[in-house]
Image (cartoon, rainbow, N blue to C red; front, side, top):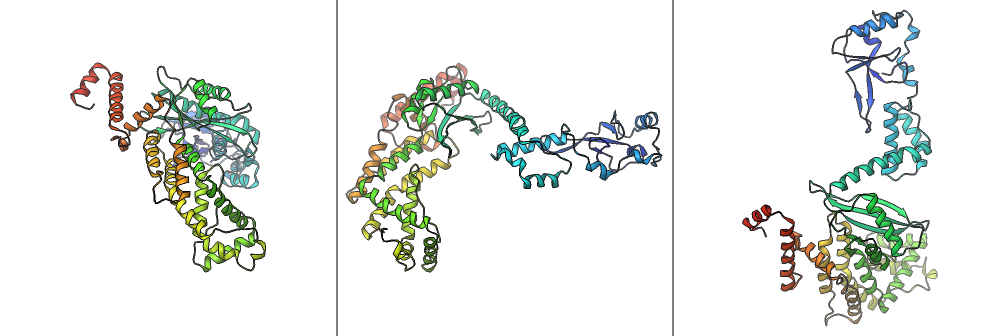
Length: 498
């Protein structure tokens, strides 16, 4: 129940004293919008005076009414009924902008804008305003400027403080950077932190996304990294900050110039680069060009797409759409090739249909020999597709997987006498691009070896030769012992842990 002003008040669930017709408990709302009734206070519905309340004691409220509101009757019948507003009238009065209820709703809208990445203009949408009126008719929504200049920035500062506090408690932190370009051709760099909490929970908060107005030199990128480390208070004495980037030279230089490291090339990006080399060999490139032309035709023509769907149904094939690849994502080329082979019967039938035949004179489908080659190459690329999917969905740190996966890929890409010429060419191109990755500097190799040894899945280090395996375990043992105190070290040795 609302007061005669704007404060929401609530009466006890059951009461005998008539003073409760004129007093109520104040109602507040927390940041999550939860309704909280404070039963340690009572508020006069006529003047807003607040009185401490001891359960069952209404004498102070009665005294207040007699002294300050003699026009009301404690029998429950008002002498001047016009002084007590109707409940319906109270609910029609707008919420004060500074009331707890209004602030809770405004903050909740700010969370929607920030968490769901909605434009500030959402608060001006008719449907959004209608929803708010249904949920809380008394609430007046502030302007979009209020959200952009006050509410969302305040929420950001609150969240930033929490993240900085979490980072300060982490013994070590790693970073990843991602350079990308918006549809409006504006360049950005996103930096994400990775650390483990005291409860052994993995956390990966996105720290910042900042525009890059200068040329993307290593020096400019190093400045972005340095500023981020300072702003988020990540630096630790005598502790390295590993940084994962793509494999561009400017990214590598940026990490070195910022005094961070080791710099670790993103393995998914490495696999992408190697795969691009494999599918770019001459005959494969020409074959993919033909497929792209066919796919583009079905994407461009609604009539062709309809005929294709009809043929799929007739041939009892899945009614999947053909896929066009994206130059920067090799796995989209794999998907395009796989989908073409799945639908080749329907594609050929559609292209030879009288409805389309006169419009497809310049489109060349794959010959039987081309199909055989495509099927062979698809099998060659399958392990790379599996690795890419694995890395894309991995929620735990993947640095320990780099060298074992690299070794397995190199093994699977070893040409055999049974391979066709094009299969050998594809495998060789992939091997030659992948083989030198992560081989220098030596400190990076050592870092990756130790990371792998600490992962229970790979602790046998079967991908290493015996001498390197022994040296890695020895280096780890030395590092662990040197980090322990004398008593801890003696205890560890007694238990034969290392």
